[in-house]
Length: 43
Image: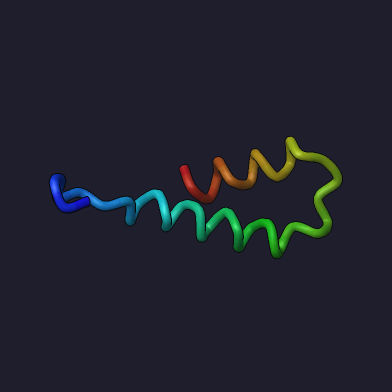
């Protein structure tokens, strides 16, 4: 991190959003529905 000035803020933001979707997604029946929702909201 000291050598390069870039950080992983964007990646952490997507990860946080995916965790939020996971907490709200108790009604999803399969992984494909979760994946579609992640693509729509993050992508």
